[in-house]
Image (cartoon, rainbow, N blue to C red; front, top):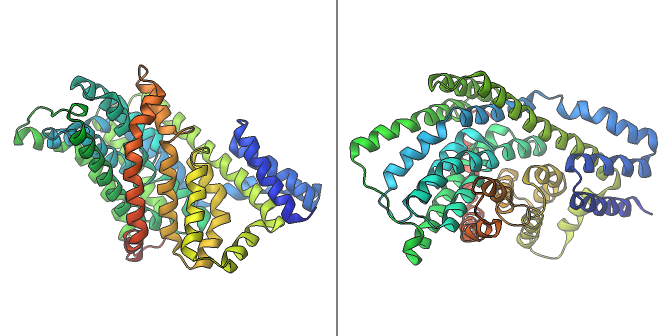
Length: 436
């Protein structure tokens, strides 16, 4: 059997192991080890699993992952999400579906200091659900808007998805953060427009809320100040070259703990829970990275990535259709595999193809992360929907997926806009003073 055939068999075995429920990091490491044994022999395969773990995590650039994760978790336990939602709601309460629109805006703000879609869904869901129930919103709109808004966590910086893509694609994490700002705003607007359309077609889905005075609105706006300060310190510092991505993450984490103290939530219980969740998330990501690098050694030995790139470069079809095919693979697999391991797994395979076709790797990374958002709210994986089901325990999972269906149109429109206008994701990274 040729090396290329062994590579294809390994890919099939990997998919089978993932669908059987094996942890994807362990599955990738196992396939990489056994495949390397077949191609290069047992000593080389043992070298894969003994040398790769240290080499995978022994990088200063990886410090952004635990630091930004800690920053987001600290903000969640610090109670910033309540103030965000209250401020957004009071400004749009008189609109049909105002609570749902406020949810999308608040999720966007929270995503700017969180970086995780599931954490955004969980934090905002606990606050938004009772408020929407109070004003008799239909559960499909309630759960759909929260689940969709939660997906913004992986797009609006600081994003764990962008961190992993930037590290694996050799693109500065700070540049990827800048690339996600305009697409994130566009997607938030598309989600809000979906709410407007739903309420226009079904006025009972999202009734109007109470009227608030200008004084009440201004008082509530104070709740957004912590987010704006953190956002300005972290991303502003990276954009203007005042700090690197790692330094910005450290500044943001320190700021998050300060706000936790100011709000009186700096307790032993909250600090322990914050550190525990950060450690669990970081360990999960690093395990996936180690497994992916072991697998990458095996695939490199088979020549599979090179063969895919050569085929795409010489195929007698338009480069646009090849690009759509690559993005289609992301969209389909995203429905079955969690977004973070998929980013690590497919980036080494498709990035060479993108470069051969002459597309910008930053632009492609943004499109890829946006496609990952589809998988966060579509069955059978749909992690944001599962998190929402854990919050709205009396709502069937099928109803939650039904509620997210209209928002899929919103994300498709946003992806089409970013595809049509690549400068939306490439202009801001291009003017950065600091390239890391």
